[in-house]
Image 1 (cartoon, rainbow, N blue to C red):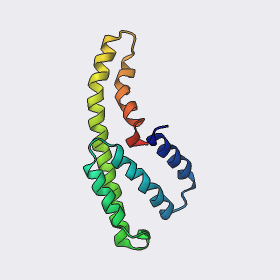
Image 2: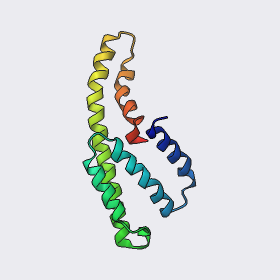
Image 3: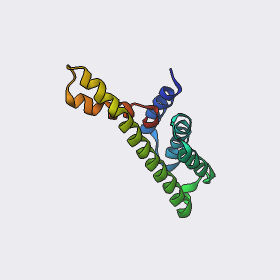
Image 4: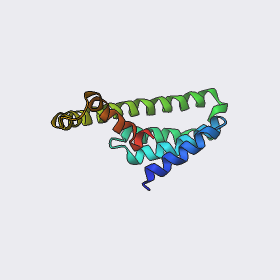
Length: 125
């Protein structure tokens, strides 16, 4: 299976067992690494990865380090939102064109197509 599928499966298996900050941080690191490798425009994500790696291993014990961690997570969230918007708008035009040519496709399916493709992509696992 592709690397994205392996990372997604591993994360989905570990999430229910994450007991605290250390476990959540351990999950976040490989997911962010995967994003850096798989996202088409990944400059901000790679910078987030560098900033995440600069944090001490026990960042949740210091208020200042915890705030830095939250800032990195917020930047990742914004980068993913921007990536999602770009991918959705690029795909939607194609979905509408193809769906319009096929007379048997319901309008609601056409309108949801690009969003579902983006949600199923590696960046959003």
